[in-house]
Amino acid sequence: PPVTVATLRYQRPAGDYGAWGLHLWGEGIDPAVLAQVAWDKPWPATGVENSWATYEIPLVDDTKPVNFIMHLPNGDAVPTTREPGGDRSFTPIDNPQIWLKQGDPTVYTTAPPA
Image 1 (cartoon, rainbow, N blue to C red):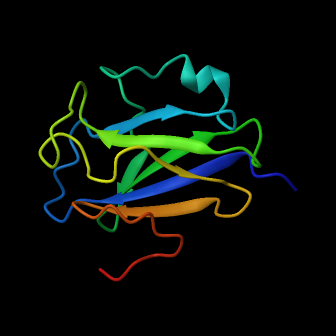
Image 2 (cartoon, helix red, strand yellow):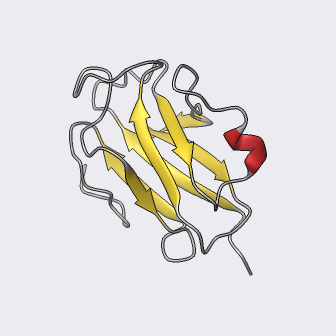
């Protein structure tokens, strides 16, 4: 069956998630989500569990990329208000779940070591 929700997990060791969120774009993402996202209003986490914030991203096409930048609202200063790695992407049909760690530009497709 098609993937209808992609999941991004993000870890900040100090647990200071605050307003950290996702700037999103791409053909795979539900347009209703894209209508809510702006540079000053990133997509928020749906929760935090076991030191990982979870971001659930509704999809319309799991074969198309989900493009993202992890940042604070209006944040563009790496590493204080924007994570390194620039514009990043994943394709949900290949990896419906990804992990990011604070300060690390790698997009992990399996849970990285703590």
